[in-house]
Length: 238
Image (cartoon, rainbow, N blue to C red; front, side, top):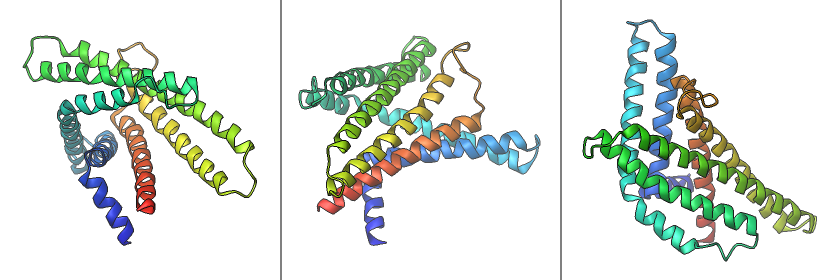
């Protein structure tokens, strides 16, 4: 019990951990609010509650957008430290990771301009910059899926070379489970990214609010699970 509380405190005290918790509440509120606002009558209590949850979700989303105004430097530092991935043994993983870092780095200024345009701080059309950001986000997600698939292939080859009763096999299996979770989370996020593309592109604009919330909630829970795994590993080392 104490171990779980300590991990929860670590999550909430860190910026990334708190962002994941806010993200989970954001999409969870959209999921529940979307369901209530669709099924209830126009003047029903449940309908009004659903509308309030959707407004709450929108405010949490705006909160995350404002907080990301300060993410550029940390992302730049990470991209610089990774460089061209000379520490990676596999060339495919290396170049996919480099391209992912480029997409992530470009995403932030696009979102900042879109936010500033919506706040009437700059005189540009925000729709174009939101589109640029969505395309970059979707590109990053797609690259993340490809990277995890490649890592899974490498882990399977590594698993064949391990002893049948070795601790290394358990570690490889855990790594494979993490990569499968990453693929699952990226796929759900990618479905939402496509939904926010211009109408006419695949299923763009066709998701109801509750389905967007469902996809986002699933990916957020995946992120929390991965964060808990990292926290458990950190705690075990200490």
